[in-house]
Amino acid sequence: MSLYIFGDSITNGNYGIGYKEYLSEHYVTKGYDGATLGKILTFSHAHLRKIEHNNVKIVYQGGANDLLFTYFSHFSNGWSSYIKKKEAIEDSIEQWKISIEKKVKTIQTTYPSFTLYLCTIAIEASFSHSEIMSLTVEYNKAIKEIAAHLSIGVVDLFASFSSLLEDKVVGDYIAPGEDSLRLDAKYINKDEDKAASLSESRNLVLSVDGLHPNKKGATCIAKTIMDEVFI
Image 1 (tube, rainbow, N blue to C red):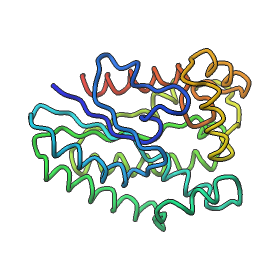
Image 2: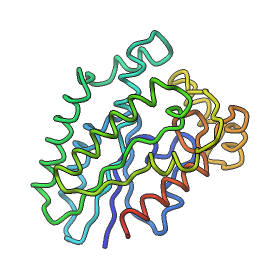
Image 3: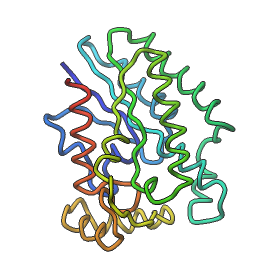
Image 4: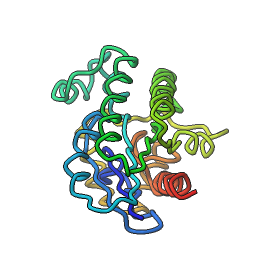
């Protein structure tokens, strides 16, 4: 059995601590920094068409950028110029849901022997910013509805984060822009201790910047994927 995981910067692992190191075995992971879930689904086609065996499970981790682009588009801040470079944001979550479901259905129809999973969105900033949490709940509801309608699996990363953060006071730090991500990445350089130090200085539990995981967040993501996919 083969497992392929497609995702955004959380899967790519350049920021914070990557979770792929904590997967139980070496599986294929492809992460695209700054990619929306729609882009991730589109990008995956080039890899899926090269798979020659049938006993394959495909996990899609994404949606955080969709959510954050929606949230930050209402402000003038360090993310403004970055967001303008990206693809247009859907006017509503319902429109986003229709677009994502269409893309997933295309993959499902093209590769009927593959078992597909969608991950719910899990970022620590949701637990300290009420507006982000509201968007997270709405997007995750849409993700679960897509999965139910298409009869595919769900890897509930949000539920795992919620369990670990229950009764915790989470700092409200969230990366103020793309430059800050680069500076953090340069400092951490994939060092778990440096990532932990940065998290502690910001009163964060599962991430280094409110978005990208530290070791505790990374192990949570990896374990949840393994538990859901190999039950």
